[in-house]
Image (cartoon, rainbow, N blue to C red; front, side, top):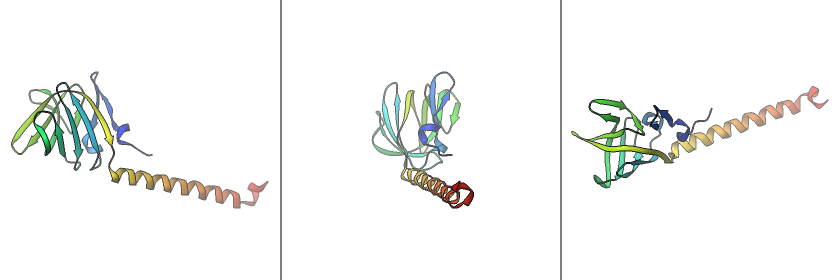
Amino acid sequence: MLHRARDLIQPFCVHGAGVALASLDPGTILDVTTRNSCYRVTVLDNEGRAVIVGGTWFQEPTEVRLEGSTAGGRALRIGWISAGLRLEMTIGPRTITTSAIRSVRVVTESFVHRRREQAELKHHDQQHKNQHAAHDACPLARG
């Protein structure tokens, strides 16, 4: 079965949608809109490392570790960017929390993901052709 990053955006409670960071390939780009700012996030790995630009804090591309989403306090939905909550990230020992997330949008999927998907489609097409060739070669199929 083929999966696209857009298909991995899942509902979160009654507030909206979210995306699991572990489901995104390195190179995937997200637009995260919060109540006060817009951010462009480029995923570097499945461990939460990313480059972020936007808002007041990130006028220049900055490498951060995306920790997850929080409603405030100590509760943290680790490894998720969830609408309705605040994005929490760290730069070294410093923790930065955004205003409430309004939306998360996958802008581009990574090159790796696109190549994997193309290879799966090519493999599926080849299997389909092989099945037709085997059917056409069968004397019983010729009627």
